[in-house]
Image (cartoon, rainbow, N blue to C red; front, side, top):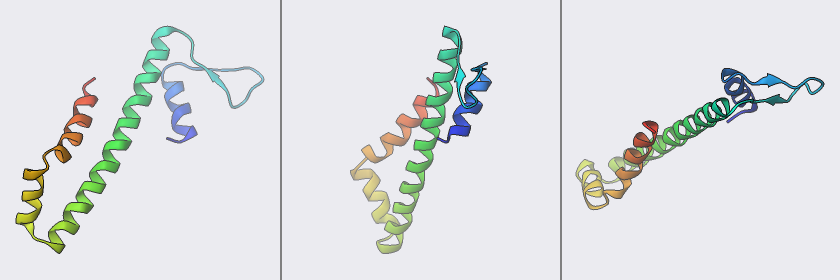
Length: 95
């Protein structure tokens, strides 16, 4: 997550600029802090899910190319925990 993304999220929840410190902001209030934490957590989950999806897709494509589609399906049948991570990430979006 970039500094600019964090600043955007902080401003979104009403962060105030600290006088005399051009690159610092303050988030005031319990509700604002919780809202900021939720935004950061959601962005982090999305980033992890995107990365995971790209890795799985790449592995599947390589697996299908080097083996075959039946072997790729058998992999998920024999190792169902590989699909659980994606399900876990999707479920976390609902939190």
